[in-house]
Image (tube, rainbow, N blue to C red; front, side):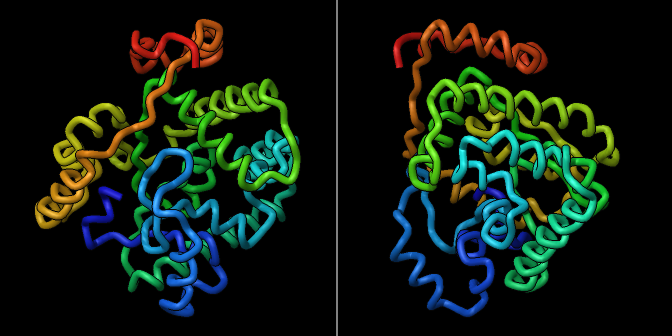
Length: 287
């Protein structure tokens, strides 16, 4: 949302993600969706509307079976969807090619809707698909925003629980969902670390979430500089105005019990050590 304040970027909209086959029909679709959507996302109270950015993964899922997020509808098969459509394991080459065609169709439609602008995409599953994404889009730039795993775990759990509650066609017990979350993030980060060397020099920047949160404008300026992107000076006023408009936003606050702390340290310890994170003292306690 910060980056699209720069008018040079296009994006996949929420309207496209929800109705990818009909979003180009005009403002009528947006009005209908606007009436259906709540003003805030259920998991974190972030503003949502048909005209704001959304993950291309949702559009792919609404057009095809080749989508990890179908695992939120069928949570007993979540790891299977993740393995097949994020890691591309136990999958035929023809199915990977079909996923690629669908993904490219989504991005072409977004490019058309945005008048040919380069796209600014947020799509977390792509972290573990870097080998495919770099082949498909060799000139792409990548921004990895990393965050304290102790803070991220309850945030991810809240996201999955909210989505499963709204979308599920199967039940899943809390312990199994918990194990899925640990497994998926571990495998995503392992794939990212394995393949990020495929990204051309100067096309990747890694940013601490806490830096972006504390100093959004200066952090974005550094991102533009490190990625060799022009235009920040022209967009700085709009970016700063948007950042200022979000100053009253209240994040969810979480507490985690000692058992969860120990499991995060055990299963995600590599990321904790790599990025130098520790448990924020105020988080320890009953949820």
